[in-house]
Length: 392
Length: 248
Image (tube, rainbow over all chains, first blue to last red; front, side, top):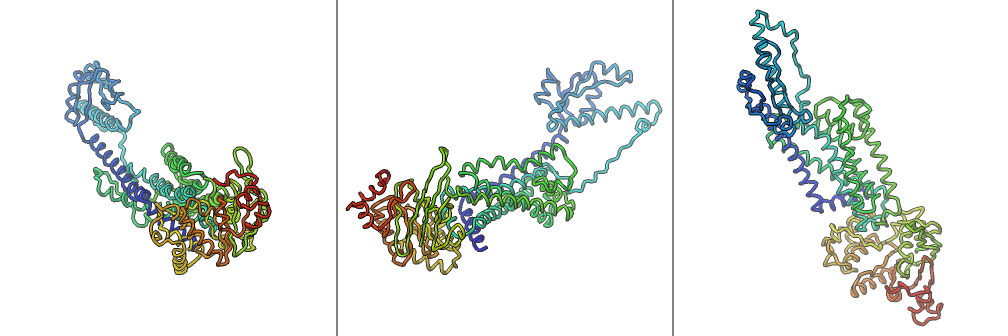
């Protein structure tokens, strides 16, 4: 126990004297990640506001066939433009989000009381760019159609409600905390990734690096058991990444307080209880990352080889996020036992202020710590290899 | 006391197995400096590594103060002070912190560590760099720090792999005096070297190793007598069978 504490303290001291490592963990990460996220958030909020409320640029083909419609659009915050020569190509090139085409038959059909044909041209493969404009134009056209239809019914002495057999109301049951924005959808992945590989520098430095600097051999010649040595290094890595994670989270919270988000509620609205839950959820991932990195670094022949495994590891916490993006499913109990997937679900639920049962906690934490135990065992076995201290 | 009894060790290499040690036996007694002399690649470092439990012998056994490292590795490591071939001190720690770290790992308390460190600093002449960070230390400063670190727990047995490697003449001289003082305190000092002059000046007993085997074992006088050479250098060459690598 004494030796464990001695090694743990020395590794942390060593790490905190490494200016580059400290700079990355406590300045670059806490600055870069929240600023990028908050910036993206502010940007998307501004774009959304612009697309919702700014004048809509709408080229119209055949505007002369429907002067009333065009005038009406003009009074509804639409800037009607002259159409481009090749409409389809212009939309594909993203010069315009949507183009309206009015047929030559429009005037004749309108006067005869037949449905007059208008056509919206847009690219559905770019829903993020054009979705807002398309739904605005569709809403305007529907509104125009309804208004004129109602007037026609009234002119014929029929009550307009005859043509509306259904009245659809909307009630959204989402809690306010659950209506979070883009950046908070990324937050679970961000937390998991940081927790998982936040200590990578220290893990590699204290194992592969120690071997490369040839200080591992004298260390192994002391009476301290190798299990103790590797456990101390894992704990040092965990402590370092937890600290880095905490600083990043605080910076994240501050960034959202400072960067204007344009009316969208982007508060990271978890209280002390929620923070504790987040901490408990993330803790096994921190340990898992530290253990896995230490095992890999013990297995790798050099610092550079150990770093070569990193992209692979960075991909692991991404998998559940990708799976959930493609097929969002209802949480089932077994999912909480799957590393990363379970944590991802729990983080989401903590952020949405949803209750988590004791059974769910037990399944999640039990499975996570079991995985940590297995990886620790493998790492300790690797640390007993003769090649550990001598090759490299 | 250190006993080595017919140990063997081989390694896998791309071209097949390499027999690094093929039946080495010798005894290093307390109150003596024993030198393992041999050309580079003779198996000296591997033999020492089996003594400080970094490697296990494939056959044969080693004993440190009568204890088998295969059975009680922690006991053996507590009785050894080891200066490995690679000095490997922590660059971001000062020399004092390096020594203190190993003192704690050996289970010593702070006051004892301070007292021992003071003695070693005096004996090795480390006053002008003891509180400096090891980044940028000279080879001699690194070696002194590594030796102090290896001896902070006051071990009965001292293993040194090529202790004078890369040191200048003055540092070598003072280190030699230090090792003789360790011997006079009744410790068992075992060092390896490929430099004949050094072994000849320092060692009470010489074990000549070549190609993983003991080629000769005895006091310098015994070696001269056994080979029929009056010159020690000729005796070594005759014992090894070649002068290749001996004076590198």
